[in-house]
Amino acid sequence: MTRKIAIFDTTLRDGEQSPGAGMTTDDKLVIARQLLRMNVDVIEAGFPVSSPGDFRSVAEIGRMAGDSCVVCGLTRAVDHDIDVAAEALATAKRPRIHTGLGVSPEHLHEKLGITEDECVERVIRCVRYARNLVDDVEFYAEDAGRSDQDFLVRVIQAAVDAGATVVNIPDTTGYSLPEDFAARIRDLRERVEGIEDVTISVHTHNDLGMATALALAAVKAGAEQVECTINGLGERAGNTSLEEVVMAMRMHGDELDAHTDVVTRELTRASRLVSSITGISVQPNKAIVGANAFAHSSGIHQDGVLKARDTYEIIDPDDVGAAGSEIILSARSGHAALRHRLVELGYTFEDEEFEEVYQRFLEIADQKSEVYDQDLESIVQERAREVSAVYTLDALQIQCGDPLVPTAVATITDEDGDTQVVSMIGTGPVDAAYKAIDKVVSVHGDLQEFAIKAVTRGIDAIGEVTVRIVDDDGKVFTGRGADTDIIVSSAKAYLNAVNRMITTKRSREGE
Ligand SMILES: [Zn+2]
Image 1 (cartoon, rainbow, N blue to C red):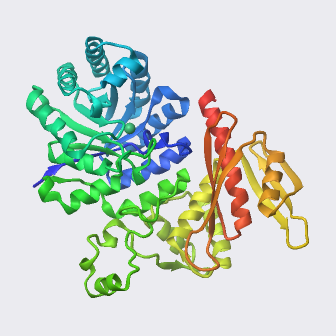
Image 2 (cartoon, rainbow, N blue to C red):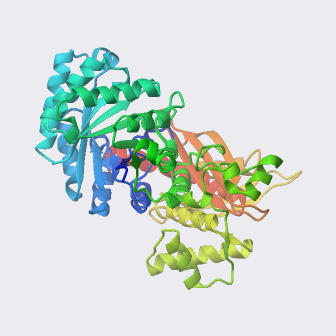
Image 3 (cartoon, protein in one colour):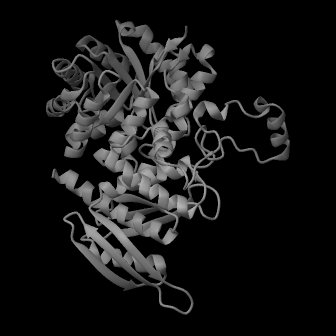
């Protein structure tokens, strides 16, 4: 049997740090549920001291996870951070505190302004302090990828001696080459006393497009935990992509002496879910989960794949849940059929909620004869967006054409149940609709990006619109909307972005 490599998912913490990927607590719970279904080993649920929203997410995910996985909260090497993390993790059956500080010359001298000796003192203090509160403490040596190796050995020795159960060696800036990074791991295993009793974790970033290569080189050199995110979401160029490391270990388990317990058939759904919730699309040529990952366009390749799949495909699309979209339901499908399919897709609803989903399904099924899984996911997520909304779009009427003046009449209800009907003209139908929304909502965001795509094939497909808006402080918010009418999707997407802007501000302010 090969070594079990723990998959530490940080989509909800590091992933959320991607510009525009802000998530509400409800969003995070939906993703966490999918992570549990995928059977990841650790969920890093947030940075509790950073905001009341993060605190609540960690607490609620801790409660939801039960015995099935470790739930982790991030802290700086600061007593107060650690106290708050322990408090948030009180609901978790298997809590872990992830604490640490920078160890590279850049971090020591420029960011922290401390000497090496002071750094080691802080390492010992934060690990001991956390160990008094929970049994499972992961220490991170931030920017280890650019640290002096002798000093790194000293730091990790101090963390191990102080009681860390996991030591995380991050290449925070995505700077390293795989062979050099692996050499660091081998060196730590040789020189740190007692390291065989703790888990070595790696956390790599994709600034040079090598995050996955770095993680795998480290696994080969002895690391037994990989920190990663769905779709490689994360700061700058992103984190290690979960789907890539999991499939690479599946493909090369013997050479790496490694396997994971991740349910790979859930990978594609997880990717779609995270992309839909964050509004950050996956590039079509992305490994494993991109739309083209299993598409063959050259005639020679198509011919080869038809004769024998493995001529040009190393992964069976079924293994990652990427098999082609199946027609599953139509307007004639009853309650039972819809409920059954939703359960298979991972969604369960109370009766009243289910009835709302069913009504929406019927509307869609009336408009388009074939309803695919992606349509259902889009319906469910659209509903989730409406449920948590501050403002909801009740109706939208558009008049446009040549030579008409584009005019929008929007009916919008706020969370107190007050409804307003406003009418505006614009340069086009979308512009008119956005102006009507601006007239009602209390905040304003500058539109930076507007993208539209069909959820499934066909002229009657649901159109999904993604928008990005920027507030006065330069913060980016993403919104999505889905409908068979693209002007309605556009209006919903804008309103969704505005709603996120408002809820994020409230969560920061601690409401
Ligand atoms: Zn990171």
